[in-house]
Image (cartoon, rainbow, N blue to C red; front, side, top):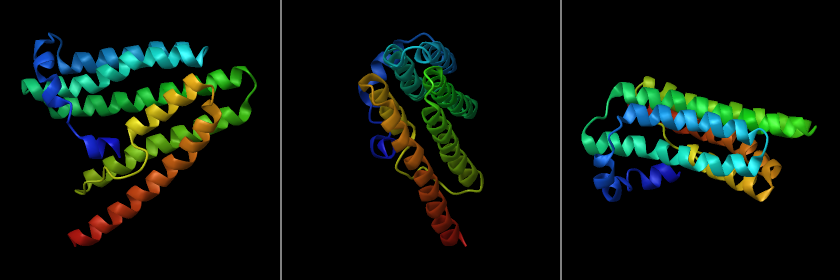
Length: 190
């Protein structure tokens, strides 16, 4: 939703800054992933601290594409690497939250984290599979930015379990939205 509406609107204001960065886009991607893993270790023990430590990783995740586009260094491998590491990032964040909730005996919170994890991965898989079959499918309610914003708000506010309920339900609704959207696209392509 946010990605679909905002697209690359930050490219222009960040272009001059992005050109001065000496790191390659892939190095920025890998660095952002490493920060996500480190922040997730903190998240497993302290939701608020871990959530705030995830912010720089999120900024790097946004910046890698801006750097690649502004310098003309976009590549298929870079896009692939970014997508794969985004899935790992989503996974380690939700597993860290599950660990945190499990350590205080909140089994239903662990279960919700895992349901949300499956939904998050299926959103990405639905898009990748549809695009592999020649149909664009970046449609839906809970794309990655929305999921991360919801988890951040839940973690820092102390309302992580309600956030997980919302995520667990809406990720699977988003998969259904993508299935129905892809179905329409495939029918049009006939």
